[in-house]
Image (cartoon, rainbow, N blue to C red; front, side, top):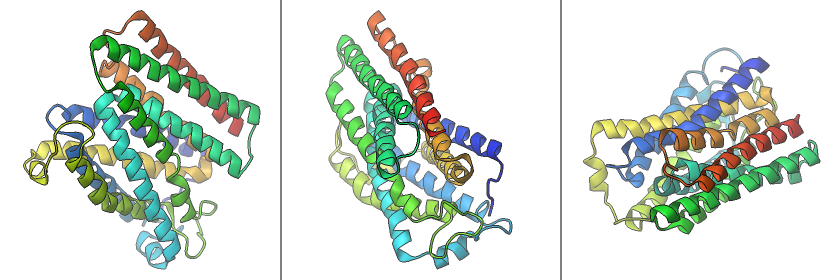
Length: 334
């Protein structure tokens, strides 16, 4: 299988991860005026599984190092497979709520609040499990990110109030729940992998390519439950039926699949680069997706268009605090 052995390439892969994770939601924005997010999300999860399979049968099966995908899958222990599946279920619940928040509040709000909170909780969990890194820099960085999240929520509340939008608090709460769940899925996936040795993985453990496929299957299977419930009892709007999904134009379905493939590519590159780049760099750059998504929302989709001077100042302060906070987290890990 393909293994990243060069540090520079690993960092490049992490940067690609950041861009992919911060950009996939643009595909939802492209179709949201005629395609409810619940319908979009079906195609999105199929796109994740498609990319995982493509990666497994190409990069995950080429070369002489490591175990090829099918051989690796056949020897994986049931407990490790189950762990990766659970990771997919937890991630899917978090991500479907995040997608709902993107549809209701926009990328510039859902990502900083949801994924920013996931960063904060994730750093705290990792530090409690293994006290590694400079605690002063680490917690100062986490504190700045926390303040940035609060400023973003305040800016959204002020802007929504001035434009007559409703359900401000609801979408912030949904983003918070999504962030809490998002911070907990990765340990399940990591538990099923041998993160220390991609060349000769331990018996019963999975390579990143195999773990990603199992993880993606957990997403698709759990979506049958989660998305069906949301279609029948939506967070906003009228209930919708599967017939509407079947009637959708082929081009709209492709947009959703593309969104899943974009996210999946970022996830694949993050997994295969983590061993060489190290957790501080891979985690820190991956969470930079928050800033990428916020920039898309503010600069391209104009989600704070017409905002007052105070709102614009809050948004600008949010960006500055996020950049400095992420930098401190990465520096602490180094």
